[in-house]
Image (cartoon, rainbow, N blue to C red; front, side):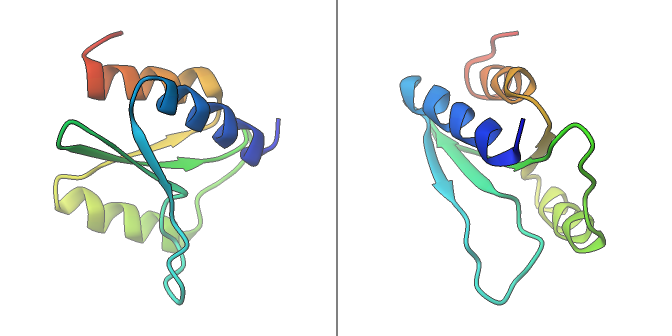
Length: 94
C-alpha cells in the first residue's frame, strides 16, 4: 500500500474520532513529519512510510529535535499501527 493510501485512511479515522489533522508543507524545511494530529490540548506528529520505507537523515534529525521538546513523533507503516498510536495517545485505548 502506498504512503498516501495509509495516510488517507488514518486521516479519515482520526477525523471520525474528532482529532484534527493538518498536512505539513513546510516550505524550505525538509524532513518534517507528514501530519500533525491535535486533540484535547495534545499533539502528535506522524510520518507515514511503506513497510519498506526508510527515514532520511534529515527526517531523523527533525524527529530528534521534536522529541527534545517532548513532542510525540511516530513512524507508521500501516493503518493499524497508526490507529493504535492515535487511540493510545489521545484516548488511552489499546
